[in-house]
Length: 88
Image (cartoon, rainbow, N blue to C red):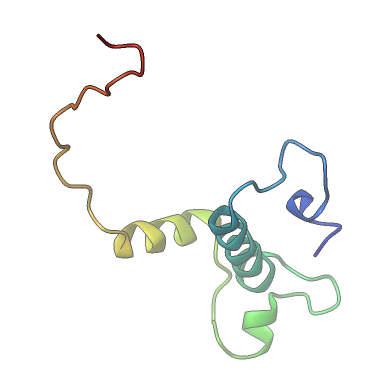
């Protein structure tokens, strides 16, 4: 996993600054590795070999599933001007 995902190495542009972003990237990598990537020795995805899936997924399938369960954005609130320290 460390070799395939640059977020596990230090001092790069892909390094996760927030733990939440890191968790999401690990989840995406796990879905890609198990449901999308065709492994050479199996000649199918690990999910297909385990009987969890009958078809090979694509990233478009994953994105549409994520969009289906994501909460819909609500209306934005009013703009509130920040107070500055130097205001008189």
